[in-house]
Image (cartoon, rainbow, N blue to C red):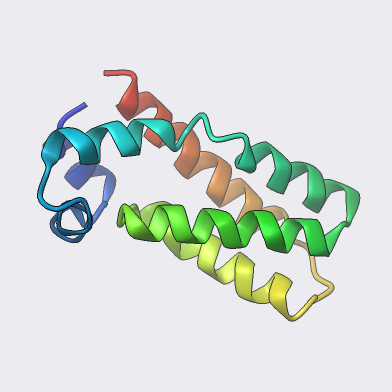
Length: 113
């Protein structure tokens, strides 16, 4: 995985690097940890079971990690989901979860390079 790969993904690598003290190696190591984070499965399971409180906790945790690394394609839908869950909005979350899954899968493929 390279910085160019993350730029192609849509990450704001300038911001992400700044948050990692411009240490490219550290930034890339942190990004590589994201796809395997078990919090994704916790989010999917909580949404699937209708546990909006647990889903909010998972989404909120992801929001912080993704935002700190400036992984914009994942951060945007996770922020939207977090705010809907914060309000305990009763809605069909299928499309947002699918967008998050797709972004996580894309990032996983990038990290495997």
